[in-house]
Length: 439
Image (tube, rainbow, N blue to C red; front, top):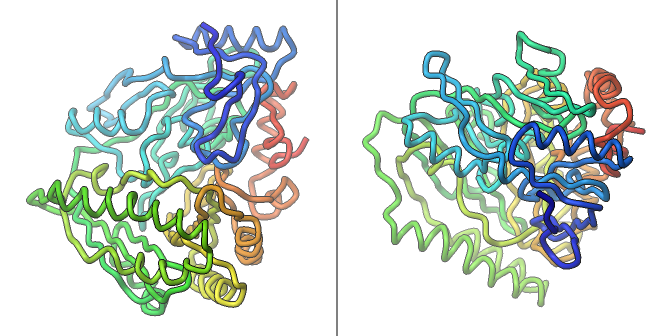
């Protein structure tokens, strides 16, 4: 049942390569009972416990020196309830497998993020989201979940059963227990028409409210050092299906967006002075295109170029101002930024520590190519975001602590009180949770 970590000498590393840890032992449970037993055994040995998915978080949220639980045997769909239109899925199931399995059943999630490598529990526990005018994060689509708590008991929660746990555990940061199964709301599979087109940065900002209001899913990428953006509007469509032709798709999504972009970043990392010129070319590389397909083929795309990322949710009303400040900062700083800035939105939700909790939000994500110094850029960006009462994505780089979160999350105390009740001995504690939730 135990195994060794990936990497050398039992060292665990995240996808971004910026976090590593050496757990005392690893467990790969094949059932909820085995997982509960592993938690009880950890308690007997005085060890902390962390479940880890695919390591797509850039923070040390999953790092542990205690027991590392790998959920790869806890995968697959448990049940589909067509009457209530829900699907219950094991926590270790990758989103990609869930999306493909649902499509075969003629079903789909309403909204999703732009990558699908993560496990369902890792993605929801950190607040992974896409973009949506009316539909929220992946966690906002949860109808029930099953949790192994610190004493090894199995707790189910929903709006009706343990509702105070449900309010918090949908985005639980791994602090309340280990999620073992999730029940999602689903709907009959539908078609989305994606319209991707370049648009000047100033025009996107001037028309932002309209672009947001007129589209179910609006997002854009701004290339620093340029006045250019690529916009993407996804809206439901009656069809017919008109996918991106295979060769064109390979050329645009693999060759340009991953292959050429990778090389451009290597050049930029070696000779930073070339970055503004490369950015001008990159920002014009992708031409306008329109295609119609099932949701996961429109919402998600491969991300093979490794990077580190910081993302903040600001009140939607503040996003245009924050972006203007970000552009001014980059222009004046002498920084060379080779990765585009991604902007998305989410409606307010009722999840205690969701970045969209209680407020309509817009997300601004800044990225740096893996292996380039990112601190100066991220620090300057974070100063702008926090001035707008920004809330950082739990799985992306930030420097905030419990004192800050208690100010920007009205229900912060509700979460920490629940944690005191469910995990009084801090079985699920690690350095990251100590910082963001307090000791």
